[in-house]
Image 1 (spheres, helix red, strand yellow):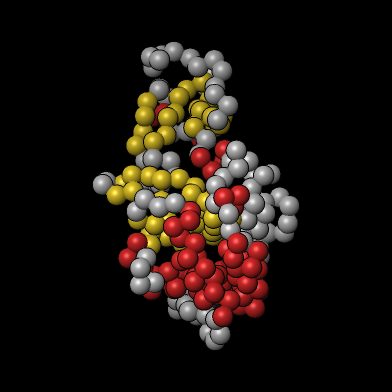
Image 2 (tube, rainbow, N blue to C red):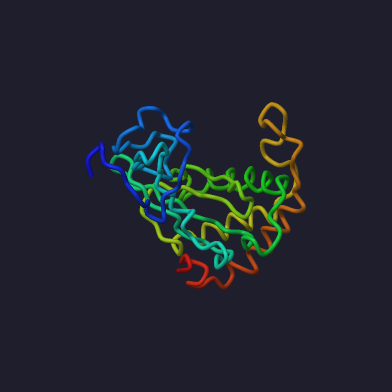
Length: 213
């Protein structure tokens, strides 16, 4: 398609975005390589449509969240230089069917899990990022390397056991170390970790390792 042609009916997996929200350089059809922060969309294809911009929908928005069960899923794989980065969807609560986690327990799990992961003898040097989803139903884990969900079940089992059994002061829960250190709930974090171990990781199968169709 040439730059002056109009796309009349956008594909179903494209989202309309008001023209004012688009940079003026998006006026014509072109391919933009991702920024360092845009790991979820390594290549964004952006076109002009009757005064609007269309942006390709990110992969995680295409998953049917009404069928999604708590589990461990490969969200995506991206190539950065010569390295593959695997993003895992660690889904803790069932989306839209049960209450989401509160910020205090999410925050506590984040501190404890990140501490454990960075110190793991096998995966410590492969950890890129661990943190919560905005919807508060789970976490994302980014690993350097090409992995499948089953490959990290032992790692996650050890991590959630660490959270479940933790006693004492949460690492980094101080004003010097954290921007919201009072928002912590260790008992609830331990409860969630124990439930995830018992209900998901202990007898996990493909229904909780592969995204639903």
